[in-house]
Amino acid sequence: MYLGATTWTFSWAPPYDKALKTIARLGFKGAELTIWSEEFLQDYYTAETNKQLRSLIADLGLVLSSVFCIPVGIGSVEPEQRADAVEQFKRVLDAAQQLGTNKIIALPPNPFDIDIPVLLGKATAQEWSVEFPEGVDWKQNWSDMVDVLRQFAEACEEREMRVALEPHPHRMMHNAAGMLRIIDQIESEAIGLNLDPSHLFPMGELPNMVAYEVGERIFHTHISDNDGQTNAHWRPGKGKVDWRAFLIALKNIGYDGPLSLELEDVPGAAGYPGFNRSPDSTPEIERQHILAKDYMTRLCDELGIEL
Image (cartoon, rainbow, N blue to C red):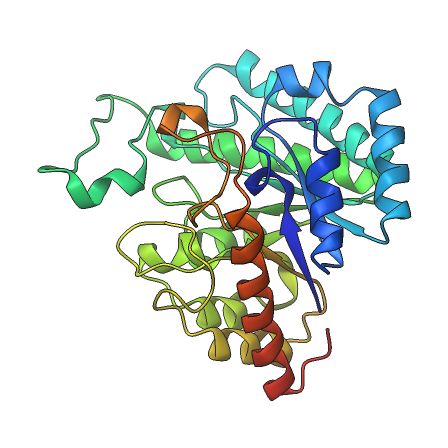
């Protein structure tokens, strides 16, 4: 295993050169890039920029562990929008290849692509509810999503790449059971899980149990902590996730991939401006990553896990 970090906690939007340099300077081996939207894909991740970023990553001695993306339209009832999601995903794959990774992390959709409130607001909400459309076919919506994900997997197979789905509160895949259901319905070794305790824990899951349940189909991990009430992204050791048990489970299943810190809700972190956050980080973000890195390194040393 090896420790990595996400670029978007240092800078929410591109360019990501400075974030990559900071991640390397802090002593991490891995780094993640993100393609938030089609706009970023077209305007920033050009062939020329991808070549430059790949060269920078190599010069810094980093490994690009994955590229994160949110294809739009996976959960839509409109066939055209689902087809567009597949084409967008293929363009992300092409960019990822140019950047130098064979791994994509993709976010599953909300049912029917409806808007669902961000779980971070639950703690202060007097009533927490979501209105769903009536008279819709839930089974068909699931089937349509699986068909899109099957096309994702096929596109990955053609390029010798893999896609790790990220469980997320209230989305169509938010726990181990949903991931295993997808694996059963899509007969492809190219699709698996990005094991993210910060999203699984508030959904009632034990992250170490999920590791055992999904096993070798875990392609990647995100490391952040919370108290299980929301999907906040604190540094490990500040919440209630049992990281010792989590690492033991990863060791026992033979996982040898990245432990990628995703500290979106720590002091100093960059964030999406729509959440009243600054797209730029402050110097405190470096201290938070150092503390998290030291914590995970100490646990791994105690457990005999080589980083």
